[in-house]
Length: 241
Image (cartoon, rainbow, N blue to C red):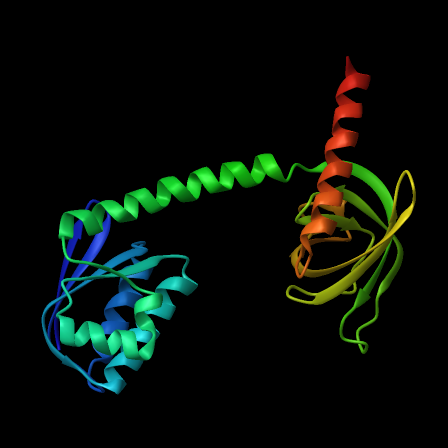
């Protein structure tokens, strides 16, 4: 398979020709080079592709995973119908957006970024952070890992928390938080994953400490957290007046 590379409005267009098969590892190599060069949006033009076998589908899946792992996006352009049917059979058409017009495909990357920015702003507005001091018990889901007891939640949102006084965990560890939420001192138990660890050389006042992101949290519990945070933020604003 031959690959020609073009760049349009920050999007790398890969003009593919020939057959995508077991000998098409160059697609993965080119995509990897795009990532290293800082290009995260890749559009694969299939107009001159004659065939794809199941090994070729695997190559395409690996290239797609490379892009996704780098928080980029890959889309498909001008794929013939008989090849599109193969993507449908393998389920890849559910992951890869397919376009018949290059201008529309290029524009879609820009639209994605606009939508993503809007969603991030909405998320920040939705999940405000509350500075607070609540005692929390932190247990590992893996019983062989020691937990942290009588440590403090210093920052709480509807999607996560910062916990001070704990140095028992590493990035990616799954934990269970148990604490009582005022004013009714309601028992709360939340599953979370460690996503950040304070660096004592740079962030000494925050050490030892970890940031966790809640997961498997049900809507009712999340709404309860959001209401608690909103109520207390409002009280803090009133006190500052």
